[in-house]
Length: 257
Image (cartoon, rainbow, N blue to C red; front, top):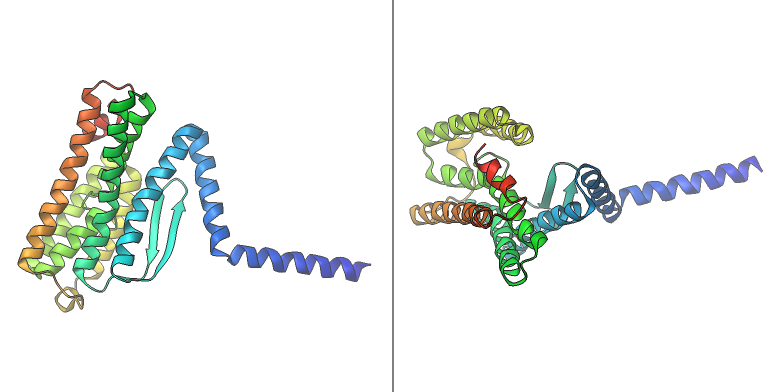
């Protein structure tokens, strides 16, 4: 009898280990944890909205990877942090820039779609989604590695092959990290520290960067694309707040922090 029980326990443990190793199960578990945590902190409706915004943003990265034929491993939601699109490393700085930008671009498209929906329906919740989506994607464009904005700026700086500009990127990153902590954005500051360590670790390899660099035209185009996307997201936040939609002042307050 004891032998049979032990065998059953062994089988159950084996099944549990197989489930744990299943990528899909891990993804579902992470989503469930994120929804539970955000529901406790905020509300179920806002938790679902936040999850949708993050998923659509990361889907933009996945689509960009597939555009270049880069193998992808899917989207992972990290509870209380955000999301991440997992795939093989880009081979050129243009691929890195394009993949990084497509997350915020998809996010901007989502914000515009919900804003139009708000204008058509005058639904309060739809309007708030537009504002929150714009804010989350704008934060992702902060020039702090490994956020999307940091990846974009890194691709531009590394393409320029200028040691002076490289030092400037390190200094600007340090200043933004300090501001993040003083303004109460500790999580962004924490990621910024990780990115700064990555940048400093590349000091000796900067001149021998193996990735194919952007041309002068590509650098200008990438910078303009980055700035226009950020400006459009800021404009969306300000526009929604100007309509005096209750709750939309939160995004504006973050910008003014």
